[in-house]
Length: 423
RNA sequence: GGAAAGGUGCUCGAGUGGUUGAAGAGGCACGCCUGGAAAGCGUGUAAACGCCUAAAGCGUUUCACGGGUUCGAAUCCCGUCCUUUCCGCCA
Image (cartoon, rainbow, N blue to C red; front, side, top):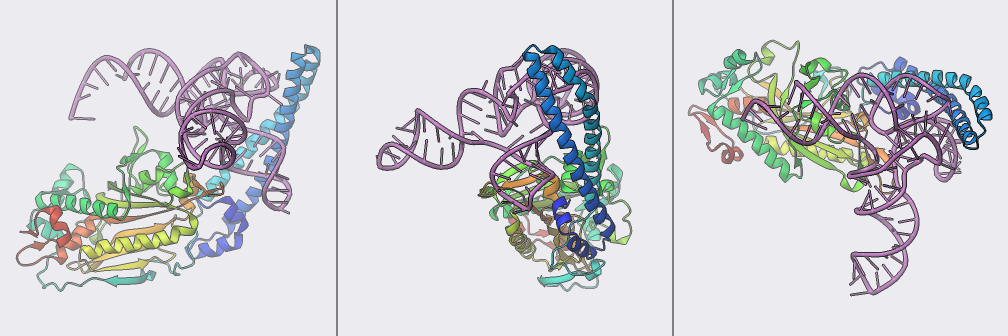
């Protein structure tokens, strides 16, 4: 969430910026400002009452020590009203603070200046593109047919075991998955990211920390018996490593990478767009996470974008980078670049990575802070990106590299797969 | 799942209902000492919110979390959560 201070000190600016996200913030921001004023006033009164109470209590203590029991008992009389008043004020302050947090959670992150105007995915701006567009014969197959033909992925078997969206990878299909994961992790390590293996289930506090809760509750699988959530991305457990942590300036930027399976309910999305590997309930992804100081976070974002680009280039896939418009950005992001690769048989661009700077939005909920060289405490900026999500990469690899002899494996992966052709 | 113990500051660890934000130790930082280092000595070492234009300063809160008793709670009572150990089960 945005910080109270930022909102109350930049009312006009916040409202104006949020327009770009299609969020009408005027009313809620006004409510926040009013409530904050009331909160301050209430705290002043409560603090005053508490201070008075403390003084009297100390006096009573002293009187008892001096054996002046009668005087002490007389002093007690004074506390009754004050105690009642204090209770009321403290309760009111508590309520106000709770209400404020509730409101703040409903306000999305303000978009960066460079975020383009726009309402939907169609308004995203193509930032750059590259790679070679393959020319496939008319007989080219979509990846779900290729997967069947070469016995790489069994979607029906997944339905039997779990349900739609939980494919079973087999033989060279499974091997290709493992190869990609290892390749991505090795590359991330070379780029200075420290690998972690996080838990795949998280508690509610972690869900709140990164912003999945409360707004996106329905998108995660919830384990009711233990009140835990299956992670929709490694971003959640990895970023939460830094929840309630005060880092040292010299430790920044923190760079982590993690492989994890990701679980998403994807409620309400069906149809031809979700066929095959295009949209799954469980998929593999290697994530990169960075924690940085505010003045350096956009440099970090650029570095992450550059890094992800090298991955898609290594894989010899046609790619493009989109700068997401205000309307297509996530609730919590300030600036997002999406990576898409072209899947030549489907003739579609598929999103394989999303790289975002959340500025202090997540950090504020996480209480992820750092101590500057002159000992001041500030919120960090958090960033993350996929590097990369596997299924759509696999879809594009299968489709784009299909030949009469079989499916060609990109050179960089051969040491990992142990084969260069799927026959 | 059964039984027991316990949750205090960066860490370890003490804590009698009344200057305990919290002894002591370690760590860390700075200073002195040294040719340099170690040792030694000294000093410092929580966060949030509020008041104040800001700094300084002051106030309030915080000893897992939530409630209760009390003039006053780290300390007593109740509930919740978590951790550890032993037993059982098990990759």
